[in-house]
Length: 162
Image 1 (tube, rainbow, N blue to C red):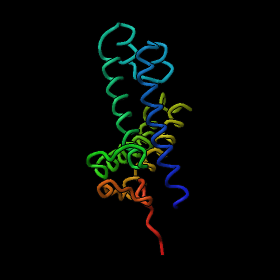
Image 2: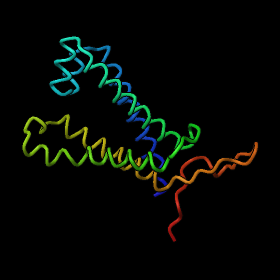
Image 3: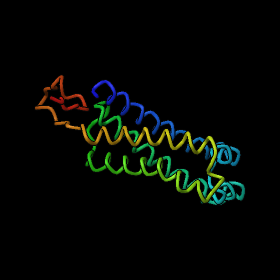
Image 4: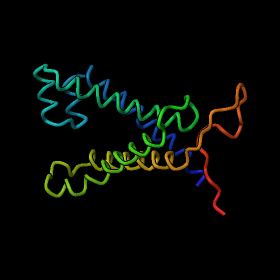
C-alpha cells in the first residue's frame, strides 16, 4: 500500500492540474477546443455566440480543478497545509468517484456518451477519486514544532498493517 499511495495521490494532483490548464486553455482556444473536449452543446453554442456561459462555466470548473490539485499536493507535503483537508479530500473523492461511475447508467439512455473520450475520462477520474480517497484516509499531518521539521512528517502517512 505504501508504494502505491504516494504515486496515486501524485497522479491525482497532476491530472487535476492538467484538467485545470485544459479548461483555461479552452477559453483561449475557442469553439474548436470546446468541441474537441466534448463540452455540452449549450457551452459550445455559447462559445460560438460569444456569450458568457462558456468562459464563466469553464473558468469555474478550471478553478475547482486547481483547488483539487492544490489539496492533493498539500496532502503530499509539497504545499502548506490547507484548511479542512480531510473534509475537502473526502468531498473531492466522492465527486470524482461519482463522475466515474455515473457514466454507466447515463450511457444506457444517452448513446452519445458511449465513446472513447467519455470512457477514458471516467477511468481517469475514477483513479483521481481513488487518489483523493487515499489522501483523505491516510493524511495525518501535524504542524512542526516551532522552527523544527520532523523528517517523518512530510505529508501522507500510511498506517502499518500488522
